[in-house]
Image (cartoon, rainbow, N blue to C red):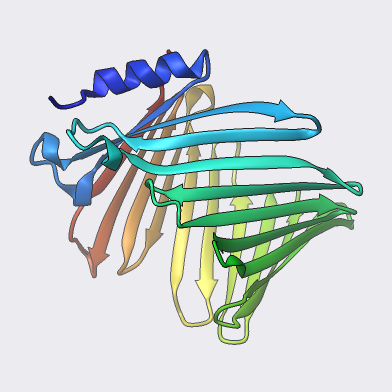
Length: 263
C-alpha cells in the first residue's frame, strides 16, 4: 500500500512537537498535465543544545505517495554551532537522500568584523574544501562599504564583490580577471525599487520590486533573450514563475508555489 501524503504529514507533524514544517509544491518542467506534474516536498527541522554547542537538524522529503519509503528523503542535514576563542563558528553537513558516503559541508566563522565561509565535501578519506570567501563591512562618509573576496579552490577562479550603500541607493561591483558587472539599486519611492545590472560581456538585466499591502512584494526580473522571472510573496505563500525567452517569444513556463503550514 502506498504511503499517503496525509500520513507523512501526520508523522512529521507529531514528531515535530510544535515546530513548523514547510510544504513546497512545484510544477515539474512547467508541466500542467495532471498530478504527475506536481513535485510536493515536505521540509521539517528542530533544534536542541549540548553544553555550549547548539544543534539543529532536519529532513527534506518527497510528499508523493510511494511504496519505496527509502526514496522519500531528498536530503538529511545537521548543524552544530558555538564559540571558539571569541569567534562564532558553525558547521552544517547535508547528505543527499540516504547516501551517507559523502556530505556537503558549509563552514562559517565570524569575528573581529570579518565573516568567513567555506564549502567542502566530507568523505571517509577526509574533508576537501572547494570554495572560500570572506566578508567585511565598514562605514564611509555616511554610507557603508562591504568587501567580499571569493576563491574557487578547484578551478582557481577568484573574484571580489564590492558594494556601497547610502540612503536609498546601492552600487555593487563584481570583478574578476575575465568579467566585470555593475548593479545599481535605487529605491524610487516607498513602493518601488529598480535594479539594473550591466556586465562587461554586454549582458543586461533589470529587477523591479513592487511593495504590496501588508508587507507583501512582487519582484520581476527581465533578462533579454534569456528569461522573465517573477516572485510573488503573499504572507505565508511564495509563488515563483520562470519563463524562458527566445528573442520576443516566451518558450515555456515553470511554476513553483510554497507556503508554511502549522501542525
